[in-house]
Length: 179
Image (cartoon, rainbow, N blue to C red; front, side):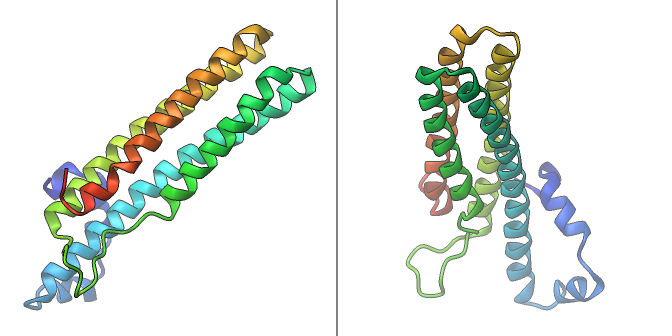
């Protein structure tokens, strides 16, 4: 992936100060700085994913409260599980590895690996949008007093959360260049 295909990398690169631009001219430092900018770009992407999921979680919490208030026992327990799964994947994304490998590690993280990781994380943005859409669909069902459909919508939302979690689990293989 070149920097022109990733708006996050372009943004980080455009925000380099004069000192950083001078550092990029120093032999041996250029590669280090390019890696650092890729890591910062990936962090921006993951922050966006986290924010989207956080917004979805807030909406799911409102849904949970509404289900409790309506006495929908059979659905609120599933919604509680949905919230727990959503929180778990959010925190994993929030505390993800940045693509660093120690000096003596047997697997080194190189620029192409970081580019693949950013590309992979860009796909997770779409999956986070899918989570938001599925939770909005659940809210729409509740808002239109179709409580009998809520359990099915919770199951659908759980599948979408499972999908993003499964996709996220493949991230480590991207970092080490297995995928």
